[in-house]
Length: 413
Image 1: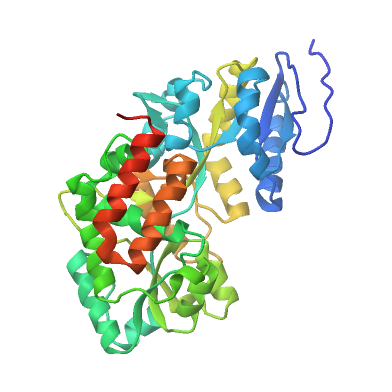
Image 2: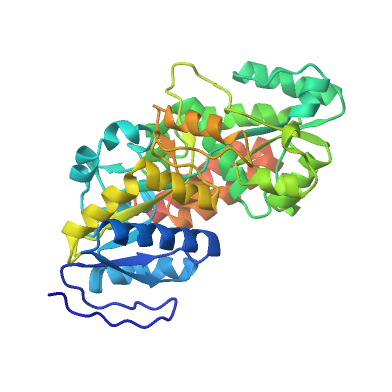
């Protein structure tokens, strides 16, 4: 017989203190209506399929969750909880607070179905995350402007340079951006570094294992400086948010944007039609470097101190299935990491191709600079990126400053 479980309904408070077999405790950071409702539908379906398991949800405000997780994993652990793979989970994994999930991956064919998310889910050779949704980054472009002027989306770095010069000759700024909130500059750095040095190097850099003054990082900055020196980015971007940067894309003053897929809905809201917006994979810089992508992943995990790990594994296996990932991601407008899930292209015909790109990525999937690096490191580094985009001649000095911060942060003598 299962004991009854009492919990307060207040959001942002740890509600559940103990659970016995048959009750699955889930801590959720899904405060926004769409994902919150979507996961509740998934849980309702799960309980129908597994009537012997009752899921109790503890809901947190999204920002408050980031603080609460450090407490509840140690003091009053749930069975299943939301978090992120990659370096965002590393401190908790290394502290022994996450349960390894290699058996969940092996028993459910996920090494094949979620091959593109394997690297992000792995630390020290073990799996610690069950990817549930993600969205791609890359180069969005004004398809109508390209077609009108006979421009083909570039596949290589040299082709990108040629396209940029062509656009400039037409009086169009090649690339828009808004760096007021810093993170868009992080996205540009991520892609140039991934294409220059690869996923493993990028992850080692964001986790503090590589010096910012390393010649390979300088090579990344040299590629970036080439674009900056050519005047490929809009001016005055430091005073613009990403949405304000998007206005240059909407009005045709700029033709490309390094951004996440969420910009498409915003661009259409701003007046563009679907057929005016195109997407291409960020161009290849070094063909010998395995192609990695930027795609922030939302994932599920089991706490090391969970009381009901058996049912937690059943739940994660359910979440990993193509049907569940199809339904959940359709509801929130994201892409399913399981390559056998279906992608709804009714509202956005680009989604299937974007999903295919991510599913076939073999070089690794980065989470985004401010997820892959510790928060303090990310903020300091992205301030440097923003400065570099305004004063590219300061590149070496900026990298030296970042290296001093790295040594101080990681207490390296």
